[in-house]
Image (cartoon, rainbow, N blue to C red; front, side, top):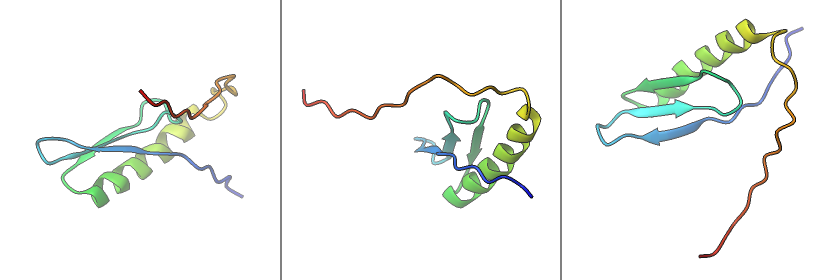
Length: 72
């Protein structure tokens, strides 16, 4: 049985009209396309391939993600 994993994509619309997706959780994930949907599709496929390639090589991180709101 395959293990499911939730990841977060950071998607940015570039001035040229393209979309760019990255993820802090999947090292090396960078996907770009003309449409939002295509960008997500590429990122999903790439995430699967990267996670498979990193399987057994990635150790649990001691990193803590702490969301914070600051008024300036």
